[in-house]
Image 1: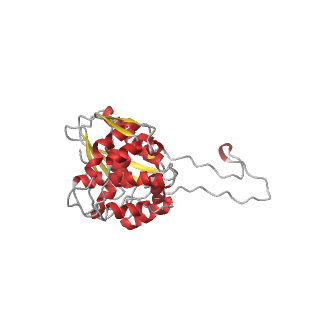
Image 2: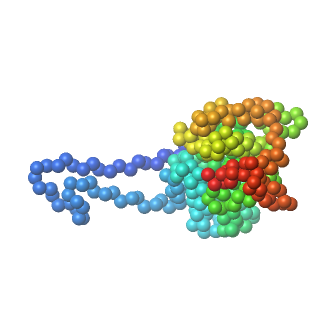
Image 3: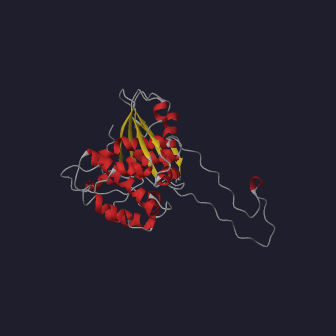
Length: 329
């Protein structure tokens, strides 16, 4: 199943309105008047929190508006909203308690006979997910598509030539985000990577991620770039810094999908957030040149041992601590 990303020029959603409280009046020499409703005299009246809006899920300071398009959804609205909330909470936890955009419209298209299908994201403002009549609550519990698309909103937009960097990040990170939240275990993460990461390796005639446009290089080549970046960052800093530090820094300076960046700026800010040159150096090796990765060697160093269709872990491997850290910190 391929998650496709489309770009549209659409009008922006209205931003959230800032709440204001009334300042206390200046004290006078006369005795204070009785405060209404038992409030303490001379203190500002408390303003009750506004009731939640219908169809709006608030997570990490962001308002997520849930729209359901379709005449016969297979599940109650509350179940769909719980899916949106749960996915956003996983991302918010990764980003230290803040969802990186202030609002997001999430449209669920419930027509068709299938279950959760593909989705697309637009400009850090809109996410659309197709989930047909066969969608069950268990499907939503194990879903990855919502997290994948929401993650697009958290990373700067780039010119189309560099979509591999955005698609690859969502492909790699959605497994990590879900594992950190307890929705996916470490074995599932590495089993999935061991099964599919080879699709991202360059083939004959490849000229680097910036130039070669194939399905494998777009999704898994980008994922391979970010996985290697995560490992190399941890190696360079004795496991103290990681891809997460780079992304937290980018988010802290407003780097989300509402902003158009260049890959040069992404690399520079990722380096600034980690105090290294790992991402810039890797970009030269893998984006400006073919930059192949010996995956068999990397799996062995990480202690990922493939056994049939599953994996086991070798905790005596030289990078076993880094493997454990990727899913935990």
